[in-house]
Image 1: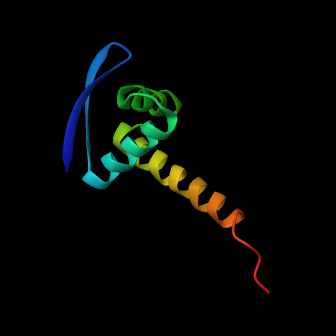
Image 2 (image 1 turned 90 degrees about the horizontal axis):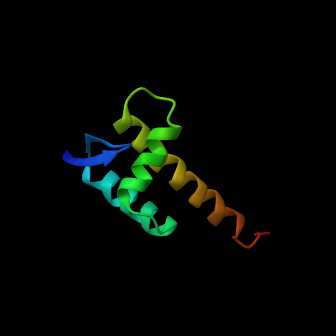
Length: 79
């Protein structure tokens, strides 16, 4: 687990996630061209789970699912 501290909506918080989730969040932030703190703030503002770490993991899962669906939609049909 990798614990990181950041400011969201004017208050400090920490999030503990596995390194692979931090790497995915960094890729998400880069794709959206936003700082990590902004991405985490967006996740925080839109979460339905009470736990921010869980919400971050779910956001990563949703991001990978969208990417997989997009990739599947661009494949040439096979016959």
